[in-house]
Image (cartoon, rainbow, N blue to C red; front, top):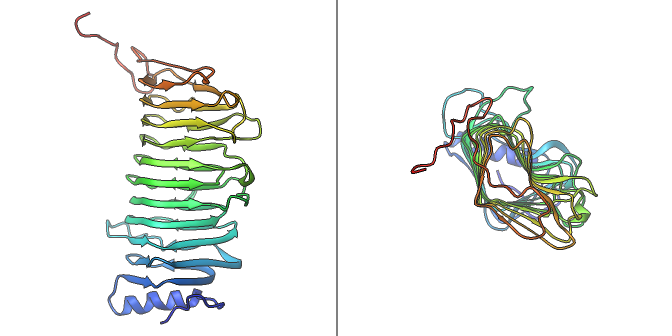
Length: 338
């Protein structure tokens, strides 16, 4: 089965045939040579198979695309802990339509790596399903990925660059997200994010939350919340909605895209207790001041060793909780030798 790169036709059926042919031959996936492969509907990657795009290969959604996602990994419903495959290389192009770049509704031991996802206005990568639809999965890892919307194109309302729901024990590493309403959203548990940079520009629409930290027991290391803005409304570098999250060496920065005195670096919602915040940095311009470094429910939060420049209005904190904690009691603080 031969795919047609740089042709004006539709490759959707050809992708389906290529995967069927590979499975019949006992292969574990397909390799796509350089070229632009236009598709009118979702490319389904079967369970246990991989899709590798060579450098210069691009799967592009055609105008009037039919389907929720450009590429979708078939959902593994068996429940055994088998290898999920790999999606890597090249580019996925949503054609500036309200679509998802890559959707993984349920899988384990799956890697999404070394790939660029462009102009998918709803979501770049979506791992999982909404809470009302039961799924499972773990170790759906994302590394060396760029999810970006054209700088002159507005995102879809409620858009998310990378979104995890109901999938646990995964790693997101060295990722750039540009142009979404929420950069990264975690609504699961026990996932780890490192060296993730989220930013946007005005023409793309509001960047309300760089990181929506609504997973239980996640970690964020060296993540960069770059210049959130929402038309004068309060907006957030990190919005923490669930307990036991940990943040280390992260940055919140306000520049010319932000609006003075509207950005909260870390907003800790009532459910976001027992977090740890160590060695984070807050910087802003004189006309783009940070409203508060930390705000919200600070009880049971450990906040130490952070850096605050003079343009941080409020919320500069050093805190070690003692004899408190609610859902998980923290014992009294003792200092050796005192």
